[in-house]
Length: 216
Image (cartoon, rainbow, N blue to C red; front, side, top):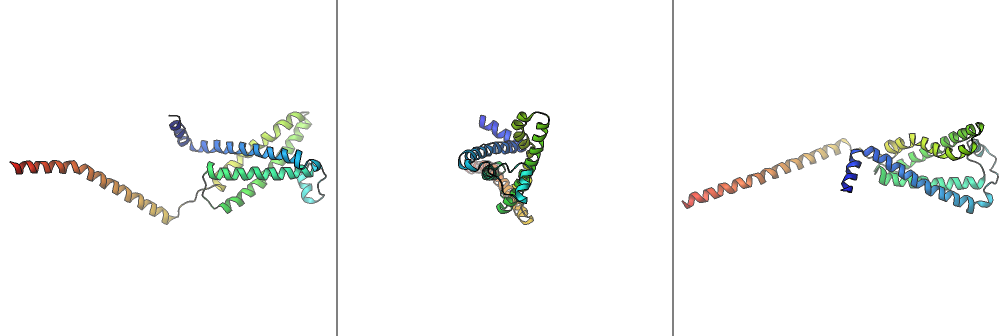
């Protein structure tokens, strides 16, 4: 009974169910990402966690959006974030959207989205934290900035994943015609079979009547 109710819900609210699965995948991959990040920061790269970053345009840009707090922290962030996004990509492709589009193209589009998301969320997060500091709410800002920014990012990451990255192949006109013909042929066969089954009792009656007449 519970399985039937679940199936009815997923069928009736198919789009909502996709969003729920997308959210669960994001939550799960984030947990893995955080675990890897803290392991790298406090164990693997502990000695260089706050080491100075290289002085060049690229790292100066990262520093301006809050992504260059220290060399070890930067390494930890890049590695853990990459692992988290890879997990999310695989799970969403295979389970959330069951996509069958070209995997190479999907990967390229996904990387573009990820780079944009990292830059956008880092910039927004830095601006928001600075605002909270100016209001004397630094502690509160440290707590709510990351989940707030992650929630905001869903406004573009979900539709991009759903409608651009993890798409289903659209059948070409020839394939659509073949599918329609196959469906029509199946329906005709089913009708013919039903008609044959319905006619069998009538034939049996006629045969029986003919036998009775012969006997008489």
